Image (cartoon, rainbow, N blue to C red; front, side, top):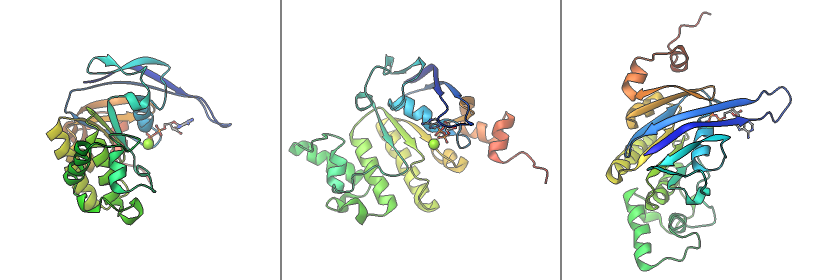
Length: 244
Ligand code: ADP
Ligand code: MG
């Protein structure tokens, strides 16, 4: 489904004392896979998603979705949706309008499309808030609105960059269950950055560990997390004894 082949990207130093950072990635996901992307802060996780989404242009290498290269496509044309930790909604637009943007950026909708917005809001449990503005919602409800917009776009790949990190544990667990259920129902492939191995266990079949701009190991989530096979991963999981 998603194939990333020898994708290279270099961050050039922006300030004194910085050194260039070379990132390179190879990833293969099947349709319907849910994969967690874990790794230390600054490892390159968000950069990988930005490359897939088209916000950054790789130095070389290729990204294909269902066999077709997406590298020449503008971000909006790529067959994917993306959800960030926050700032996914336009503050001056209602919940209904924020979701409707997923269908038409000009917000001109047919009756059938309006119904799709309502159905999508129902799926994530926020259909009673359609007239509200984002500021009148809780953080969890705002992420549900953003998720509704992603889902109604019907794109085969969903990219999540720490989408629920700002939420309380119980709410986070609820959102993960919801994403998993909807992704399985719609057979959407999900690539989710998370800081929590527990979150990875809850949602992801596969787990990809990134460190220093490279994928150091990947595989079945339980195997990767229960039997970390490389020192970097052990250290990340806090399993390396530290001398104090
Ligand atoms: P992660 O999401 O894993 O925390 P990022 O992908 O955001 O990491 O960043 C990877 C590395 O690239 C970090 O070392 C970061 O400081 C650096 N970086 C991020 N954005 C830029 C930028 N615009 N210019 C230069 N370096 C950057
Ligand atoms: Mg990041």
